[in-house]
Image (cartoon, rainbow, N blue to C red):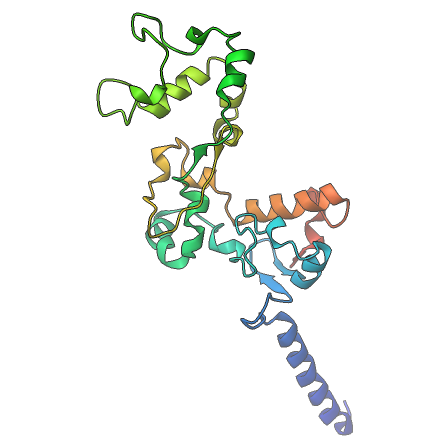
Length: 246
C-alpha cells in the first residue's frame, strides 16, 4: 500500500468502527431503543426494535404481553431468563421489576366468568343435586363456601372441592392443565405492598422452567409465531440464518 493512502485508510477504519459501535450500542434510557442486541449461543441477533414498533402501530403489549398499556415495558429477559435455577430463585426479587410480580404470582385470580343460572340450566337441567351434595350432607343446597373454606378442617378446601366437582362436567378444561384456568379464572393485579405471594408449587405441579418459557423458547414462540401468523418475517427451522449472525 502506498504511504499516501495510509491516512485515508486509517480515517476510514476509525469512521467504520465508530459507525458500527453506534449501530450496535444500546439506546439511551429516553424512549424505547432503536435496536436491541440479543446475545445467544445460536449467534447474535440484532432486533430492529423501532421497525417492530412501527409495524405494530405502537402496540407494545402485542410482544410485551404482561405490560398492559405501560409505555416503558420491561425487557423480555427480565422474566424469561436463560435458565431457571437456584441462582434465579435467589436473585429474581432484586433483578425483576416489582410491577411484574403478579404476572407469575397471581394470587388475585378470581372466578370472574361463573354463571350459576346458566350452569343450572345447561349442565344440571334444573336439578341442583347434580352439583350439590345429597340431602344426607346438604339438606338444602347452599353456597359451597359455607362449608368448604381453607382446608384446615376435615373438609376439602374450597378450591379442591370446586375443582373436583367441576371436573365432572369440564374434563376437557382439566386436560389442558394450567392453560385451562383462564376459562374460569381472571387475574387481578395486586399492589406489591398488599399481595401475599406464594411459591409456584403451591398450585402448579410442574417446575418453574416448564411454567415460564426460558429466553430461547420465549423468543422463538413470540417472534416466529407472529411472523407466521402475519406471513411476514422469518419462521421455521430453516430460517435461523435470517436472524442469527455467526
